[in-house]
Image 1 (tube, rainbow, N blue to C red):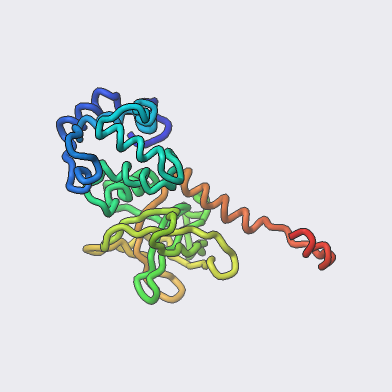
Image 2: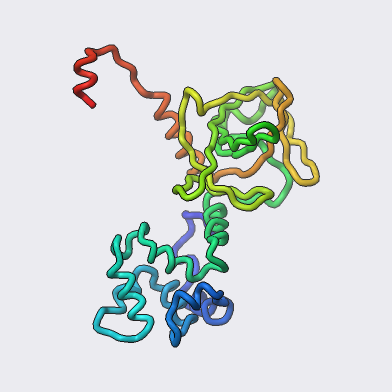
Length: 259
């Protein structure tokens, strides 16, 4: 259902309307955001079926509580419908279970990562792992797909470290034992890239973790997630862009002038 190749719309407005009226339950922060007297289920239905289009439905000449809310959103800076508007963020959190945004982060993870139903895992382009010891850093595998199958001997894999972040825009959202973690991907060659060697065997499955062991120093790594192909390929392209930079010997005066 979440693949982009499927026909649109995936879900009809009738199904969405029925969900808003019969299934969706508003929380305290939703009732606080919308003024008293407003039909919360009706507003949810309108927002889900029309999205940004609800702005066009309410102009400043009307006087209902819902219309006043929309008017306030349109007059704030940065102006609606900018995604950087705090009012836009408040409106999108209207449907959330709570104000933490955990359900929205879960949706982000589902949209960008493969769903697995079995226990088989392998390291390939787009695999995200985490160190079991030391700094417990997250790492993104950039090994080409064709170089991670039919392996007969110990093989070296390329990884880039992923930085944990709070408050910044995240590149990836992953879920581990402690909940959701926001990660930023900054492809780099000097300090942000590492190679690890693994045996051509399946990851060791324990009671709570899927673990891979480095063939060189026996360090262990936990398998976290696998990006969908297009997300993984985009990360590889960004990394390749760093590798393809051209170094020139040129006049220092010209170099400084070019900045």
